[in-house]
Length: 400
Image 1 (tube, one colour):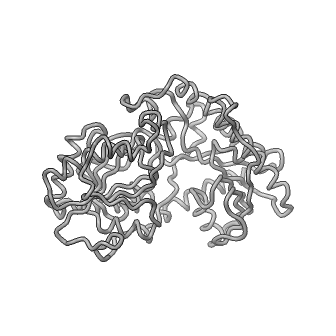
Image 2 (cartoon, helix red, strand yellow):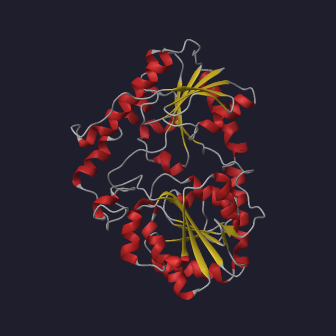
Image 3 (tube, rainbow, N blue to C red):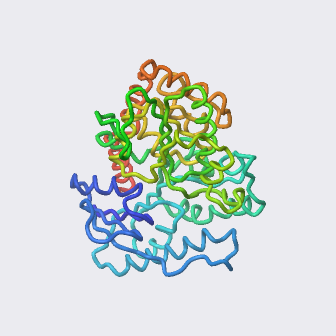
């Protein structure tokens, strides 16, 4: 079977399953993206770069669709130019214009990774009243689903990483959507013996280490809440450091409208004025280094508005971190309070700080939560579990 995977980036969510299928001889896998060519991990990669996109003159509400159309056309042209492509199945990440035009080239059925369906109310957009969106942003949220709806009409089946994310999609399409996570590499993400060194700094055994990881330091992932919690914890526990992994960028939302043009990190540090001697900002780090950091962590704090579940939460659980998380969807599907982690309200800084203090005063008393966290990930989210589920879905769709 030849499977064509399409995503704006390689490897992203689809690269690992494509490599696994190629490595195990189950399928010939081809991957179209904007950033990879040649062979990668047994997968033949084709580059497709859009030649245009939205401009300042494009209506604010249609820019996402405009970009997706240019992307779809680039994928179409790249595939048409490759005579070796005769896919039996097409798998694409919905919303980016990955597969929208491919039915004109191939009769193959399509499976869509359906990660998120936008809602102007009741999900991420209006969860933080202190950072209100503009009226045009609410209108744009309705329009952002245009390409996703085209994908839903075209695909034979789809899958979402969590039940909550699946539940965001229109009811008429849900019977065709299965809940399957991308998968966690349990060999990479495991607690391991490591030197107590962060960067070039040796951390004394007596110092408690709190970790926070986010792709970008932004409001959607509660960076400002984390800093407030850290300040309260540091006031009661002197020998503690807070290690922050993430880029000084905003990937989601309109934070800069509320910061006077500064980065959200700069805005938060300026307004909250925490003791920066307690913080270590590492920027973006490679997976192996992050796994070593998780292995040092006495407490990992994960905060998010109701939005796509971050890989970092499951990676931290797989590394047996004691996790303190916001009790928001879809976190509630993974973290069970007192069983495999701890929960508190996203906005409840006092409760978050109080629970963090309890853990840091006696980390060993909470170590069982981390062990249970790894057990949960191994049972439901490990690649050994999710990859066979995805392959079963692909086989069933291709056989129709």
